[in-house]
Length: 349
Image 1 (cartoon, rainbow, N blue to C red):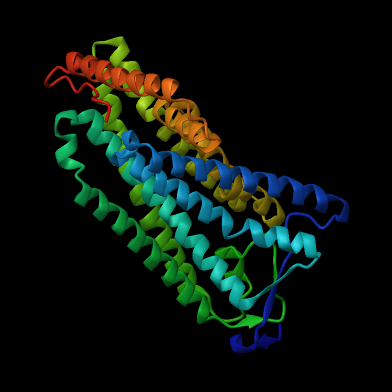
Image 2: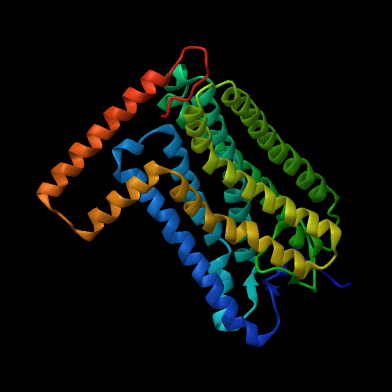
């Protein structure tokens, strides 16, 4: 194959999910719908947490960051895909491709680290409820978020710099709907051994390590819950972790499915279709999982929607405030009664 110096490369060709012209309007409508649902759902979660002071806790701080990350994660790929379908143009410039790949790796890695941090938060809340406020203090939470961002930036920057050292051939067609790292490396004419080595090493280190932390946290959580004698307390503990556990299974399950499908078949188009699950579908479903299973989020969303609709009935507003205060006091009283030192019972924070 004719080799071409990297500095002369101006563009790549994104082959997308299908070459059939009649399917393009359907793909455009479907992905536009999923993107709008993802953006709106995650934005509502963020606004509900910001506007409701009762949600200003570590758990919801991490959740708001996860929602922001999901918006950014989807925004790195879907808008460009929609633009290409609308313009009937599959071209992406070299600079756009490198930038898209950098931010995709950045926010994908950040998603991974945030899920790990949230698992640790639930571990402390359930296994060490009496020490929760001390262990999950604002400084420590801020440091965990900062570490997640820094690790993600370094991880994506490393891969970006490794790509810049490669020379590419004249065949620049990417069998995907975005600039996926592995697909771009396959197009290189120069030696990619170092790129492959770094890719597998960092993926193993920064993928397996957080997953191990999550599995360890939930093994301790399950062990602690099983020691609780009260059925009601067990249900509260499981419901507190249920949403997060569902998101973890969805995120890692779809990611593992894409990896296995790419290993089992050489069909790049099938791999691209499978990757839609973790790049688009998972961020879209996350807000529904958290809002449907979390009473605090549902209450925060109702408050946000009432505030946005401009309903200002003083009488009903006072009744709502009194009801909210009364419910909070009752909830705190029940939790205090249920808390037995050494039992590992959940204190909902």
